[in-house]
Length: 297
Length: 297
Image 1: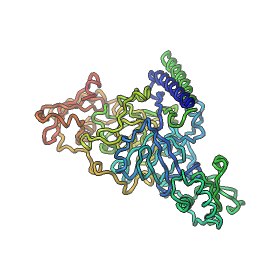
Image 2: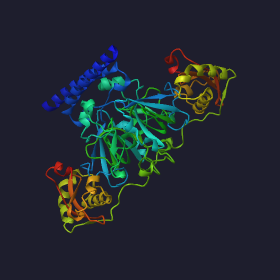
Image 3: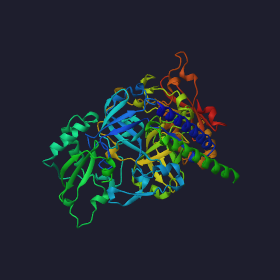
Image 4: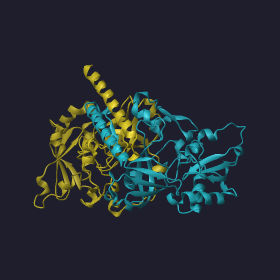
């Protein structure tokens, strides 16, 4: 009670400060005007950390997410008709950008780069507006997802490439007649799909028992129906080389076989190795004490 | 000098107030967190008013716009590589929404409707998130345009459906492999294209001299190269019935032939009539004293 009261008070205060800010920006030229955007909801995704989250949508069909709406902004009636579409756009905030707070609090001091390294070009740099990099002056992301089911205050999605906790600003129906452009051309470096497929994905003998144990712990709040379904998700996610550029370009003398990589799905730490022929062996799955410990790996 | 100094002072003040606001929202749950978005630039478009602006992109190939960037946010290097793409996404603010200031200043008091009337359904209502209506909790628009030319601080676009003065939050390259979805399905009411083509567009005898006179007045700052090019634009825009629902559904007893409609392109007031067989006769073009006088018509 007390807590929510003080929260409400904080909200009101924040609103007043924002009104002031807006009133002051009012008089200024459009370029310096600031538009405050309030998320309509939050993504609950199987991807607990950035690492392992697909680099493009619809690549991992089993990648499920639930968009949970803020009831104050999204009454159920506002979703009526969305179920008639197969896909929708999701406009979201790149909230995990490490520079994001500084970008908004001290724009002048945020060292936003004009050019960014492109994974497809093995790190060569392009202008940020020639890429879909998260590090943009307005850190808004655009992705498409499959609409699975509409419920009172949430939408179930699949094929998502969104990390858990992503704030969502807007969803729009996908309209083929205006969104799907026939013969749109792109530079050669984006033509051939950069997603590196791995040779094979197999599991250790102990994996089955490990995931059975873990499943009992997450069953209730999982987006999946069974340990087997979760195993299929792991296979789909690992079917593409999800390692970062720096992880792939490691010193020649270290053999892949020595390194254990980590992937966090549904809050579970999946450890795996990859050999020089890109065969993946999933070793174990466990419930980490603290997600942050594996987030970076 | 004085003016810009006071503007800078206002900006700093606004930033401080925003920082405060952010600090206060910080402690709150994500749903009530506010993300301040600062436009990267502004659209200079041939469409001076909402009326006449196409309801979807790429419909009017001669519809030109120039995205002029805020040099403080968009150094030329950040555009390097964009010229290699044929199309780009534009994320923008629906800045002409009459309810927009209230939405941001007093969210609680803004009467945002959960369902909106759909022109294609002749006014039947659908949930706002099942439409691309401008009247959304986060009034962000998404449209695609053809990339014509990149210059130091601006991008020339065509096929736009954006009104002059639109604040732009972000541009992204159009990536067919993730943005163009084969076999995306939509409800029947959006399947057949709603754009009502007119039967014919012809011009009055006096039109040629009128546009010649007007052209001299706008020539210097126009996005077009000649009066003839401007005439072609007028033909393209009027090739679709751009009248609002209320304009089309007028009392039975009034004949179309009695009504003069107005379209404002490149700051010029184009007056036209439409007969019962949807033949359009462009009567005259003139330089209005005040755009607002014709904006609503």
